[in-house]
Length: 255
Image (cartoon, rainbow, N blue to C red):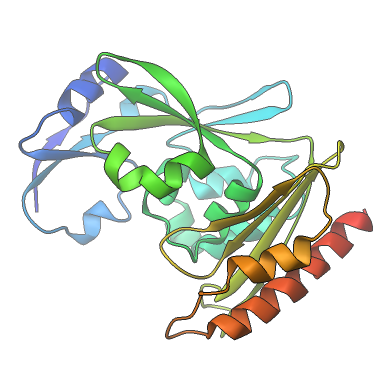
């Protein structure tokens, strides 16, 4: 139950509220999760007045404010490859109007196509904490520890590279379902290649980050060696990860 609502006008005021031990206080972006109801009594800090809804380019990076909605992200021109389809698959149109990019990453499971895509892109986040200098953190470093490191902190920006070649493929039980296997591959002009897998577990998995694409099918299969659950067996996911990895590389190589 939400027992307090705050709408600060500065990041420092928001951090003071988020640093409190009682009541537990959470950032409120689109509210697609917190508004469904949570256990216990909590306070929320509405981020709408903090100016975090801007999008800008800095060199080869696209810097996306934390409160940019998924629909707003879809409306940006010039994003790499078919990331638009990954965003569209993440949520329905109505939810995309409310869900923010930061909130999506905080709550994403391993079945999130967008989180898998951004992990493959080697995206980074900007974190703020009371009385601590803000820092940039790679998404791949933050996701495994987000439950421990997110309380009291505020994501203000997500940065993704633009100078990349990107492809993704997924398998789901129906077009409306979240994927049970998804593969996202990003390659830079230097040849550096990253493979991320989704469709299972609490967070997506980085299966490969190498100087080229050699061994990428094996990397996909190996990363899902224990990826069995009620949706699919580990053996099925291993086979599909290899097949989808090959398809993605074919897309990238064909230009």
